[in-house]
Amino acid sequence: MRMEPRERERAPTLRRARVREPPRAPRDAILRIVSAQPWTRSSRLPLLLLGLLIVAACPQGPNKHDIYMEGLQIEGDAERGPCKLHYAEGQPAAQLSGDQLASCLARTQEALTKYDEAAKLGLDDPDFKKVHERARQRAERLEGMIAQVRKMERGLE
Image (cartoon, rainbow, N blue to C red; front, side, top):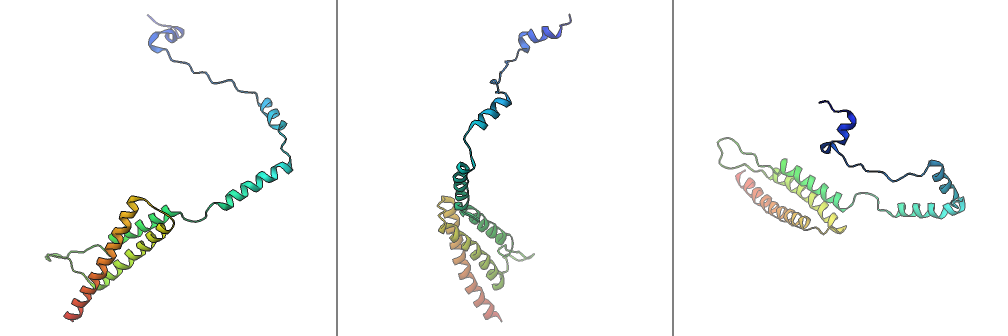
């Protein structure tokens, strides 16, 4: 019982809905419509000037979100680099040095500068506010830690 190709198309399980595309205008008709428009050089000039004005008015350079992302990148690099605590074998705690904390503070302040710049540009996202405040608190804690570690380093020497 072999089915011919036309019979297969007629079979109820193999039917497909056919979607017709709207009829298209011939190319010549479209060209006639476009060429019938009264576009002369003098009428194109104001449109060209308007387009140039819009492009020139667009802000150049990084926007507030780009600056925020740069700050996050700097802060992430600091956490993976100078702010990362290194534990020595057999020691119950990480050893801190004033130089390590100072470099961590410098990177955190770089990120904080980027966050301040993004805030000046008008970034008002709740997540941004949390990150900005957290960076401020971290910078304050690091300043206190540096002072304490420096006192301990001077006392031990």
